[in-house]
Length: 188
Image (cartoon, rainbow, N blue to C red):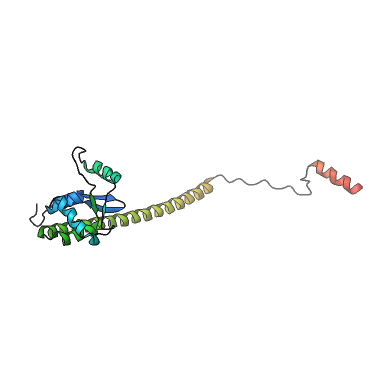
């Protein structure tokens, strides 16, 4: 591992989860990376609650915690006494200001790099999805054009049938019954 990295970028990536539509990191994972006790990290956050609004840091609900535990394989034996805090990218950035350690600052820089890299990846995936959709639409239009060409070719290849010529002269096209009814009306 590079000496500039206190924790590996892959480890940081593995510790980012999606909760409530936000990419978050758990308090105990951050405490492990910062090399501090989770209780001390939580205490620092509670002392500086005004720096951690709900969109920076929130406590997980029991169901959210159960769902996350299944994702990273936490044991149900033993465990935590309180529900963990979840920190968004902004909350993680704010942590280095309340922990007052050089390691916290260095680890935070690494974590911010991972968040930026994830944002770039997401952006490139969205561009790729847009280009793919445009290509699909272009192919659909070309398919329709090709179908039209094939229909025209089939029409040209079909044997030409000449419609029968009409006979010359006066022809009654109405049924005889209609002719008789009109004749009766005239005679009255």
